[in-house]
Image (tube, rainbow, N blue to C red; front, top):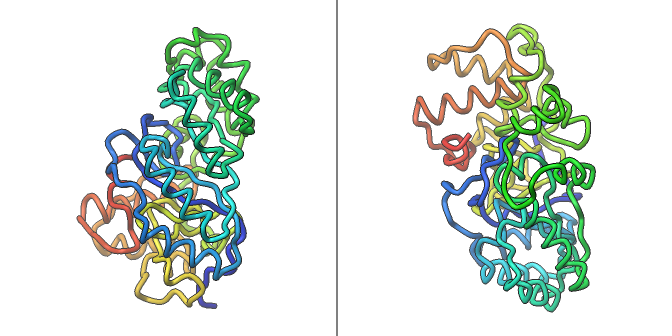
Amino acid sequence: MPLIIPQLISGGIISNYSCSSRCRHCLYACSPQRDKTYIHADILQAVCAVLLKHGCTGVHVGGGEPFLQIEKLIEAIDIITSYGIDIEYIETNASWYTEDKKHILHNLKEHGIHTLLISISPFHNEFVPFSKTKALIAACNASGIHVFPWVMDFYRDLSVFDSSCTHPLAEYESYFGKRYVAAIPDRYWIHYGGRAVKLFKGYYRTKLLEEILCSPPCRELTSTSHFHFDVYGNYIPGLCSGLAIHANDIGKAIDSTYPFITTLYNYGVAGLYRLARQEGFVAENSYLNKCDLCLHIRTFFVIQKKLNTPELQPVEFYHNL
């Protein structure tokens, strides 16, 4: 069965990978050290054309932190909406907000933006004072912009500490108990990819390599229930950050020009492991899950073998884990 990315159901556009934070659960390994590139107009136009061609008329915009370059964000908003594509919400960690930037919210509203997803979590609070988060929520309410708090369940936790400064995860564990971080995935959805693999590997029981190698083929690569196109115009299959399919190949049979992706789809992580062993890859004894092993293998190819291939992109992702 060939790998074909089907109709695009629900997803978003990653406007940039640069971020004011370096959250330890970040799927896309965003950070202040990432390339400052913001999505170019021609790339965004091509992505919008692909979205419409494959049935998607609404997206969210995320990052990185989209508000780091507000003029380029407004330009991106206008391009997306000019295609008749609705922007469901824009994600932000609130780090950019100060009282003298209220006008940005009114500007957003004038350009058709009705909702901001504002991050509320201990991960973000390591870098963003909660006072900024609360101030942005209040300003949105005053401006008539709806707030999608992600997630409100942590509001009470963050309120325990001094909101004028940041707080490390260790402070949360000291106050709430040692298993506090380990229990976070029970409170909101986290995909075990990117930096989250390393973080939660320190809390959860791992599985032996032999058990991981029995995992089935990665057919979730075709899922489009929460897809993303990134700043470079690449489609990220199945939330597998660090993997890339060119936007123009959506809807086509993905062939041997994508050897890593097709191997995962047809043979699973065991197939990728066989390829890696031929190149000198040495596995660990155990892994959190198949995504942990897959990420280790792909990082080996990019960092140690210095492989630069269109499907293992962006390379910076692997250098910022």
